[in-house]
Length: 157
Image (cartoon, rainbow, N blue to C red; front, side, top):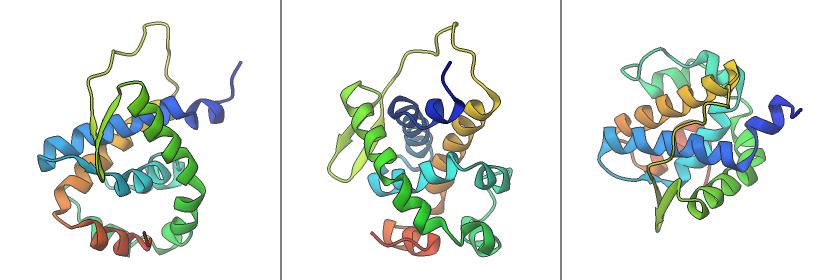
């Protein structure tokens, strides 16, 4: 039996999370998700303390939330570096298996098949998916450009 970690950190699951985030970003913003945001979404969605600390609604200001989470986000830039290979693998997997489409600098969600009835998601699996969708909407609603968003999160390109 596979461990939960190996399930959550595999490229197919990362591609699913990016598909969900991209779809909700596109609905909110009307354009494709900047690829740089993919590298912020996975370290947030796959990190349980971050998932649990996120606000309950996208009406909450991302910038206020970031300012109010100094301990939680103290190591965020390092987490982004650590998750970079996972994000790259998820994007590559998604593009190769038609879960994502890409243009220079952006990714878009493609329609994917529903979850097989034989797959019984764990609580963490479902929480990661829900968080990725939330983050897609949240990023889509900020109206900020990539550089400003990265700076707020304490990450450099």
